[in-house]
Image (cartoon, rainbow, N blue to C red; front, top):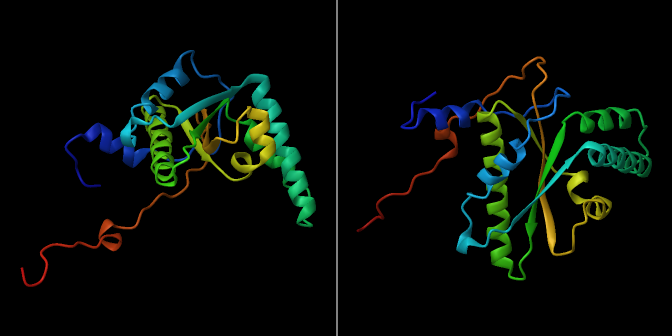
Length: 198
């Protein structure tokens, strides 16, 4: 790994990874508020502050996990698949002690919507980095539990709002570590410099 001027930040960016299995231990009081406060410092064009946050825990989280199971069952039946994976999906969704939904407040302007979506995604990443710095794991989710109208109804969201992602939060339950790697930046970068004839 290359060294960087701010080694702590560089280390956090490099070492943070998705957590797939969580302990049942609750997070200390105030922790999620701290993560949200960090998120609100994300860059956002014209200071629109387009993010809204929903914390789901306790009985609400369990009810959301049951909705996850119902939606998974329906999808499996529609696609003609067996229901053998549904229980596992509900169990996996139930693991984190809390979920933080990152929601975009939609603007009527299409260009601003794009900018605001990017700002909300950055805010969610700041939550992940801050959680990592506090020794807390995070799992970014989208898909069914971010798109289905029933999830929107459960969370009390309006048509002027869009779920950007949901973050499972909790302490990591140690399991076999997945190999982590990234392609070298040189394979992904093209540089433009001086223009010919100038």
